Length: 143
Length: 136
Image: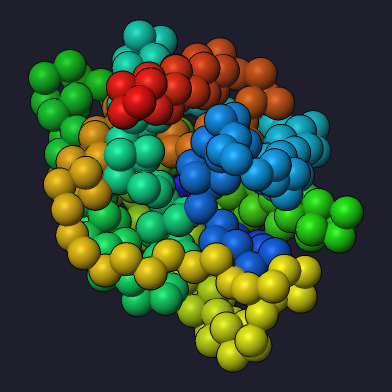
């Protein structure tokens, strides 16, 4: 089992809540990462540079944290690269079809008591837990 | 220009929060979803911390008639449940459990150049593009 890190995790969570508040207060936007990223990749009619700015912040923040604290990006499970590739495809299709991911539905949606986001969050938590269980039972994947 | 600076700052803070919270360690995500095994509840504190802070501040922000750098808030208003919402979220959850990455931590992990993060994000972009093309 990984180390239980309630304090660091709560601080990290508070920063995420703060970030979502900054984006709402200044830009009037919901911090749903899958929607922002997909909108930046496949722009519609209007050009929206704020989307790329947010993604650039994610990437530069990731770069800084990876340089300062490389252990925060350690990958210690034994999932094959093919499983990771299938995972990426499912996540890409799923978040677009379901209109959001952990940030948009889980953080922003639950914070404003959106019933759609509550249903979405319960659904992806449930299928995620079932998937981890099945991988452990049938493939012996260490968790 | 102003909207770019604030959105960039929000992205930066979000990335730091994800890394500090442990979301960029996919084995920790898998441990969180492993309710029937060696459950690591840490990531419930990420969600709890984020929702607590945003829920409190959301009420103050939306009391304003508009955001600081735009004419109006862009907040989803739909309240219906439909099949794409549930089926899409179900597929996302399966992928989240398989790979241990959701979109934010995947993107934030790209600059660390781990092979898993690069493959995950490449496949995620492919999936997003495929869904867009399939819908026409």
